[in-house]
Image (cartoon, rainbow, N blue to C red; front, side, top):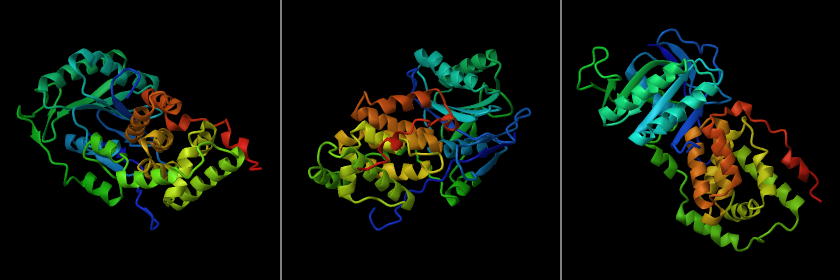
Amino acid sequence: MAATYRGPPTVSCGPRTAHQSSTSGVAGEVVHSQPSAAASLSGAAGSVTGMTTPTTPTSLVARSPEDLLAVVPIVLGFVPRDSVVMLTFGARHTFHARIDLPDPAEVADAVGALLDPARRHRVRRVVFVLYSDDARTAARIARALSRAFAAAGIDVLESLRADGRRWWPLPAGHGEVPGRGVPYDLSAHPFAAQAVFEGHVTHGSRDQLAASLVPAPERVAAVSAAVGEVPSVSIHLAADAAWVRSTVRRHVTAGSAPPDRDVARLLVLLRDLRLRDVVWSAITRDDARDHVCFWTDVLRRSPTELVPAPAALLGFGAWLAGHGALAWCAVDACLEADPDYGLADILSQLLGRAVPPSEWDRETGWADVFDDPA
């Protein structure tokens, strides 16, 4: 096996200034990739990119099961547990996907959650990695996946089970692997070292990734105190739109964090969907990573009732940047605060259908409505 993977875009959100689940019901994430000139496979070899990014991504050449296991946390952004991970090859829009390990009654839904986007994007070949301590459950899921994908004309190049300490081929008994499995330790793997060197952040679990968005109480308290000094509604819509646009643009460009009073004003104004859309329409694939840093900071300073807008804007920026798992975490945070928030529903559909960021069309110029601040 020799497969070239390209890692996720580097998102380093450290301060540069002194102030610092799907429609099927199966929970999971989709991570998109750029098309690659070397995206064809022969047998068990191929090329795939890890995440959409406007810059040159990390290149990782996998030649063994251990290499595959090292690739997965890097392209997802976290170490999966009790999960099914699918790596795809040969599609115009290559993507990787993770779903929660399904219960027996949910296996058919889980297979569909992976097969539907694979067929939609005309994937030709896949690799599955099942993270589970339960050999029988993993084998049953792997068989269901193999049958369904074969029936759809998609080749399953490899299926593995891993429990964090050992890996096994699926079906069991395949190859020359002992029944007790093959030990592995990714902590010193060259891919992990390369990812750290290049600034990629890999969380220990999806829960850790989600926890990175949880508001910090002391920072929320500071913004909450400032919210009381902000008018509850926009009085001069055009002027407020100009302020929102310029404030966000300034801090996104500089990589800086706004003071509490500006965060408070921004959060209150973004409750007006017209003003939120001024920001939404300004996020592009070129600056999506910078928006991820900005809105992560704002979200972690947001009182609960003001969480939906920054969470949804973070999710949209994360999707455009190729961080599918982070986008889902932001959607979850938004819907927890407001189950009916429309932008979160749009994001859920984009993520659940594995729509690639390259297909996003922003023909509607919301920001242009407020060009005249008078």
